[in-house]
Length: 99
Image (cartoon, rainbow, N blue to C red; front, side, top):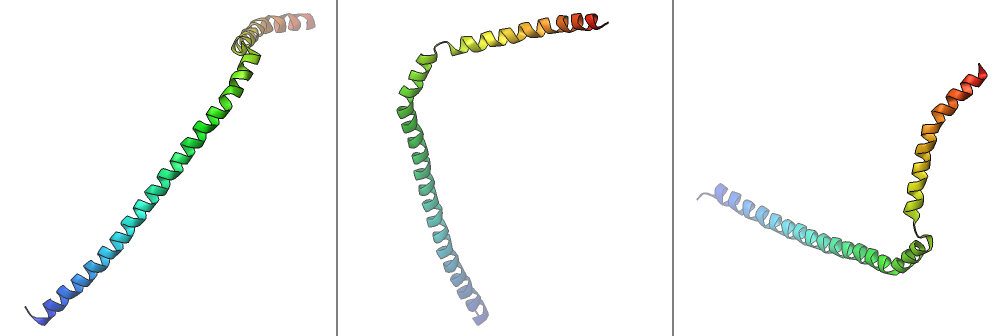
């Protein structure tokens, strides 16, 4: 093995050691970010469940107070449909009065 090949091998070894150090730092950073992300999502889910647990009795109380809210809404939609059926006849009669 001549001197040039030996220098090339040593240079390659140094570069590979440097790359290994950088890869270890990158991997450590990836693990740290995964851990922080896990803590973040645990906090988000925990706060959501805690808020639901805290607010659930309030929501049930409000729901009991208003009772059949969906029935009121559906009857409102039925009334709107009736108005849509009656409105064209009313407009026809109004235009006939103007003639």
